[in-house]
Amino acid sequence: MPKLKSHRGARKRFKVTAKKKITHSKAYRSHILTKKASKRKRKLGKRAVVSRADRKAVKSMLPYEF
Image (cartoon, rainbow, N blue to C red; front, side):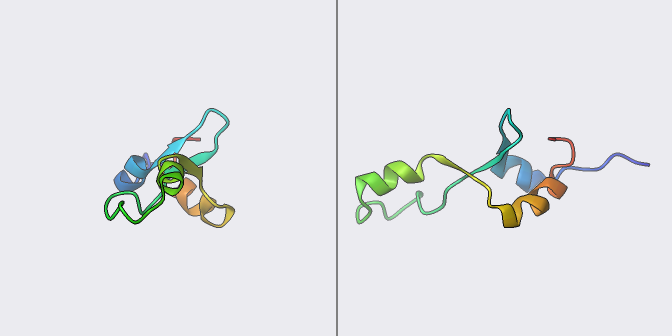
């Protein structure tokens, strides 16, 4: 059976932690920051865990990360 290819876009967007959780960067942090509160911008800078509904799809795009 041939090797599987990782989805290159997914490789750039998702990271796998040591405990095999999948994390992603949050959206809405790139522009129009003046109207957003400092607290909101600070929280948008942190990484978040991928939801249970999307976990299976992300795992299939990153076959060798787990």
